[in-house]
Length: 476
Ligand code: TRP
Image (cartoon, rainbow, N blue to C red; front, top):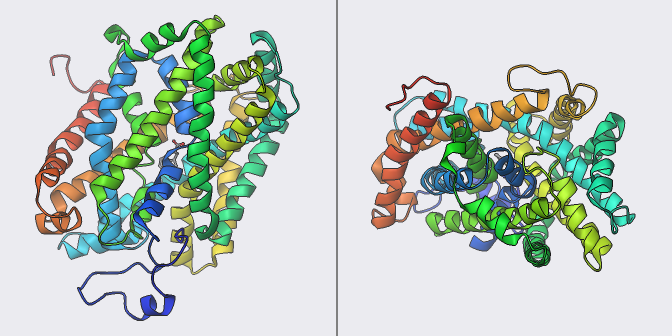
């Protein structure tokens, strides 16, 4: 995968020697131009629909405050160590995730079968993108709807009617899904090195700025206090183990961890960059944007007497409604959905890239061929989600619609399982010297990481899994 804006090393040098004088492996594709470039790229992957679309609606469905606190705890004690593990493994292996896991496995004198963890990640990325691209299509459609002025001065009924009509028409949804998937294939096929860094550098601050404009509106709506207390005052009676699992899944999803995307990016990280510092910067900006989205959306929900548990369509009603009421709303709304589409796009790229890199290497395909093959497969799978909100809305099994099942399988099962295996690998399979070497020596931060990676994160994930499926009795 080549995302670096500037290659720090000339190509021929890298190809002729993959190991430098100090005995360290170098990336096959060059390195990030700076620590900032790496942080921006991972932030571009992390900040996306998960923060602005999914976070508010799962918080709403799961009762608010208690869910948010569990989610924050998961980010800190599980998400952070997993993210650091992914980066350090990526930097040590300097390959795509499947090859990295195999290589590190053999280097540590253990099995090369650890590559299966990478394979599961590739598969998870494909499944996640199949519905992520559909929602990316929704945001794209909303750029045009906002621009046409459809939401100007519109009340809750009108905005809801527009959304229902849109989601109800599978052909329209399929059309935008196709466009969004096409855009993603286009970037991945060209090689994503140029543009991404610039895009993220502009997008994240701009997105933040507009969120603050909306925050101003939310504060003036008169329902800010209610929104605040919904988000932060915990009602523990609303919490079940299934809810805890959902909060943990959301933490994995929003940080882009558990499937090797961050591991792949870590492969291009220069030796001297601090891994804990980078991981903390990403987690902090990602979490702030999600909380900000919550602070904007819930006051609007309460001010308009809407249902916080309205599900995946929540932000496509609340945000147009807010924009419809503020001066310059048509303009701001259009820009906002453009930015959200960008944010979704930079995330979609990172979901697809591991599969593309693997097809290229495994079957000796060109980047273009691989991107088109993988992209077409994902696009086709996307129809399961396209139809979940209209034609097949009543076709329910296990967890609900096809979309509900995909969401549960990937976020609540595959990502935490992938994260468990990754953190277990870094904490128990890799020897102390290897990990301390990557994390800047055996200081205090290292000790904290190692404790979280060896004990807290694995035990936490397994415990929540077992509880959620009811395998542990109540006293445990
Ligand atoms: N984190 C992104 C979001 O919140 C989605 C995403 C991108 C992702 N790459 C990922 C999720 C890898 C899991 C794994 O929208």
